[in-house]
Length: 219
Image 1: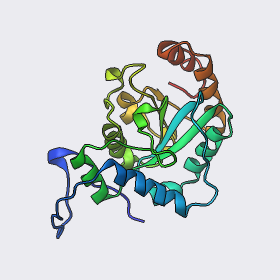
Image 2: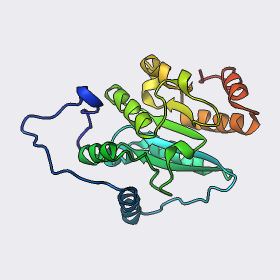
Image 3: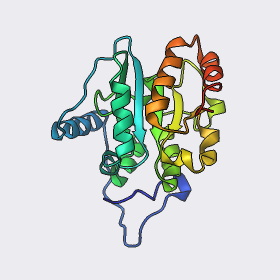
């Protein structure tokens, strides 16, 4: 599988030697939904839960589908969230290169695979980051979701809570600190139940952040 390294936006966007500009495309929202459904059709054991009054978590791996689905930590966190009756967790991945370019050009927002719901409509946008070279892809996903990249610019009730976790939090999560509302540093088996419990108990974004700030593994 190819790692997505050419992630930058605008004037910094890179091309490889020999890349040629392809024909103009006109991607539509239905194209994104069709691609997500085609992915689901190839999977076995898909988890599908109605949203209803559940806590809605969009769980992202900041690289392409095949790289994300081969990551055991990502799979574990996805299972931990969905084992809770009052939580629905759906997956998000970085689109492949050409699809990403077409999606940006069309101004289309990031959708989850399971229900093809815009990420911005979820309560939590959780990103499982395993490699430092995927840090810039985190910003790409935030932009594609239609969210401010800086935590200080987000608003409760308008933007999901952005939680960053994964293997990199054991090493050096500080480069991502400005972009996360919460950083979860530790094992998912311990942190996921605590995060969900605090969300259940919270009366608002400020009370949630204050409570998590007192729990081991969150900041």
